[in-house]
Picture 1: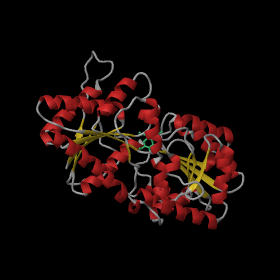
Picture 2: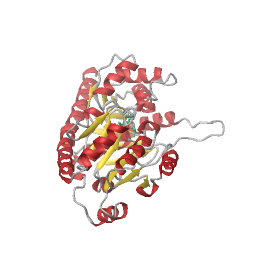
Picture 3: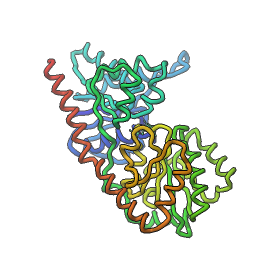
Picture 4: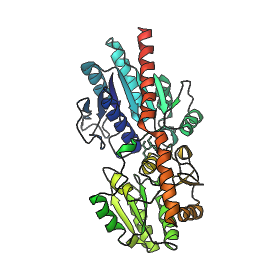
Length: 382
Ligand code: GMT
């Protein structure tokens, strides 16, 4: 099948999922065309079945804002016609789903039928999408999609709650490729571990795009409590609007010497490989791909119980769940896991075992079944 994948190319979870899905589809023999305004960060090596098409918005003095959605729509029309795509799969509703709908209608006027699948990822529904500035367009384009998937049951419930949807929605969880995560320290990982925790301290990690919704200040406060009991270090990887405030809080609490701020990282593998525990205390989280990547690296997770996180982190098995903002419980649970090597090793094993429920072999056929279904429906209409 020839599949066009529309995505954000940045460090956000939706872009990572879309890129990894495309790579896996290409490995299975499909021809995959990524369409975005920059090369996706996880599209790091060449594969003969993968193509990348860059959307170049047109600048003109009249425009205060470049009309990206129109440039994307035109690019979709162009790529579908000239590459002979069978379907489009758009990740993150805004503005990808409405651009796909518009492209579909233009192509119809040229006699070309192309179905599009929309995958909702989270903030396109829970934060940004439901804002009145976008709601009518989002509702319309979800309803017009030939198929809609979401990354958790929680997001499915939220979508039906916040929008008037008469289309079916299928839950397809985020996934990992278990073999691609690191479990034994190589030379580079050892160097990093010695640098961060030279005296064998426990390493606690968080990776995100540092938005408010991630509640990184909670992590810093939890870490302070943990350090009062055991030797520990904190790695914060990623960058974004909250970074400055987080740095300020570290200073205020006098723990800067024990916190390593890495900035954006291309791959989470090396950092997760040296970590003993991962924290995700988010205010809202449709799934929590970063937590799943931690589990796949054998790293237990301390998280909030917001949104779809309980579908990923199994309380008392792969880590612990708490109410949003309950930093006392999160600190206690962290100590429960980290206090002895025996408990830590038990949780590490369980974390890895649990991650296998989300392996790509289980998830990829679900997307392929959706593609087959929409293609069959289009053929029936012909
Ligand atoms: O929250 C992020 O880090 C980015 C955001 C995105 O859309 O790029 O992530 C959302 O999609 C991820 C992949 O499906 C999910 O794992 C994240 O939970 C979700 N983020 C939120 O719901 C806040």
